[in-house]
Amino acid sequence: MTTSAHRPRSKKRKKAPKWLIPAVGYLVSIACLIWVYHGFDWKRELPRIWATSPAWIAVAVASDILVYVTQGWRWSLVLRPVEPVSAWRSIQAIYIGLFANEVLPLRTGELIRSYLMAKWHGLEFGVVISSVVVERLFDGAWLILGFYLCTRFVKLPQLLVDGSLILTVILVVIAALIALAIFMKHHAHAVVRQSRWKEKLWHVVEGVNAMGNSRSFYMAAAVSFLYLALQVMPVFALMKGFGIPLSFWQAAVVLVILRLGSIPPQAPGNVGSFQALTTLGLMLFGIDKATATGFATLLFFVVTVPLWLAGFIALAITGMKLKDIHRDARARKASHVHES
Image (cartoon, rainbow, N blue to C red; front, side):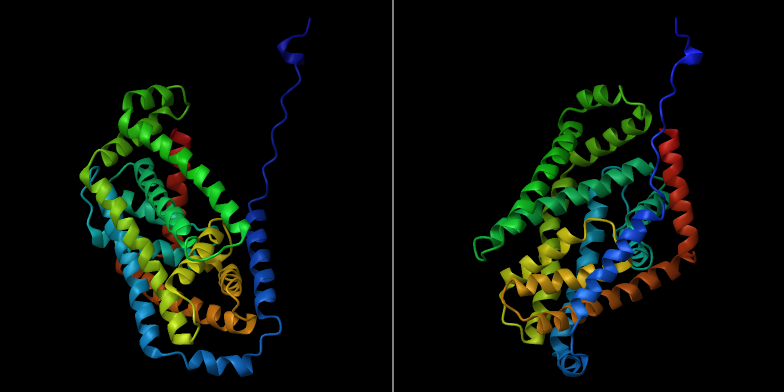
């Protein structure tokens, strides 16, 4: 008879090294940069970049700033039923998170901005994370709707259409879970009661239910359309200034490609993949690689440099160091998981 002492021990699954995913991100970034700039004639193309209309650059910068101001406003609307947070604090946290994304790998800015909002307003960390998930659901829904609207004006490769279908399925699943918490709270509680994370998930269900049963939730959904439309403007404005004869809808397609490509964790600031995806997006519409590469280079700096400056100022106002915030955010996340 086999005793418990002689039972074979279940093998522990080996975890991938922590450095593996960042390393893959950096390798992809390097590969993208090599592809984008291989054969690029800087001597010939740089004067064209410098000749871009300053007025259109100003429009691009202003609209890019408005993107994140709108996002901060929306986040405050999502959180309003749980805690009346100020739009300023939301914008500040978002810019600090964006700044973190520019200097740290794996898009840690989402974690950092959630930690800051929880810290500043005494909110349950899981509830703040849930609000970010709700934001991303709004973004995904409008992105998909915008994508299919673009297909009525622009013929797109089948690969992009198939990719959008996969994203649609994922969004439907997330939307169903959120709808369960909003409209069938008792059923949602019954489901999470079976989980080993039931205590933390209980707060999440309560938070999502409060968010979803408020007027501000639907206001936030509407503001998300403005948030997406404003993201097209820097691309379209720079196309005008750079002399690329593409329509607003074609600029929207380039934005969709950029957004879909930025989902996987990658190198800080999406360096490499940003340039590659922008270049590929323009080449879909018959723009030659040299012109597309020059435009991608300009777009990267126009949308990134103001973000660096605003993020640095937002961080400086707190009097905190980014490395300390990052450390505390990771500790808060670990504590949240452990307590669950």
